[in-house]
Length: 299
Image (cartoon, rainbow, N blue to C red; front, side, top):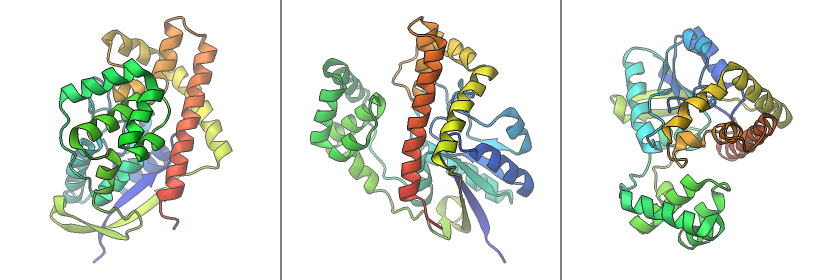
């Protein structure tokens, strides 16, 4: 008797994962489960590149737009939700198809996560206050003295991740990078895994990495932002700005929000906003490609 299976569809932004997965799910009767850190948030389906209505009509989709933009999700919260969705699929005789570009989520799915203690709101606020007081450069230096690995790995201007690493190191006395290493070892190349949360069933693992050539991917990044605008991305930003959400919230860091907000406030032209968003998208895609080249199984 053949094993049930779980399918992983990974790759950088704008690579075509959603279309690939929707077609696969339509053929196989599978269920698509979001494996992307930003697509879990509601309110920005275009800018976060969630599956289109046409793709959603091809197969069931889970964990897209399920968390309000005012909230902070996490790898741990996502993992619990994903495990419940996977168990539900398998119980119904359906194949879960995990689709996204967040490498940590794929690792946590196959290997689990260390349980980082809850960080008090006071520690969170203090980290953000310090960042605003001394600026990114000095803050990164302080973080480096506590967690050199995170300080060197986190992208420029990513205030949320910088302050997260700082508050974890200060509050727990242990670097965030060490917490991540303490996770159960994830073997992204495993041919099968046993799922304790789904009745200890063993499932086969099928992988698909969607990785276009860099120049092609960059062209797709540029073109997709134009498509987003044509479909109403500007209205998404106009709709979320009146909520006056903290700009450190993950949803507010979605590429295109800040850039289009600058245009709406008169700080730049629409052409400049588009160019800035396209550059940010290409930078993000480059980081994702680097991760997948280094971490994803070669076969």
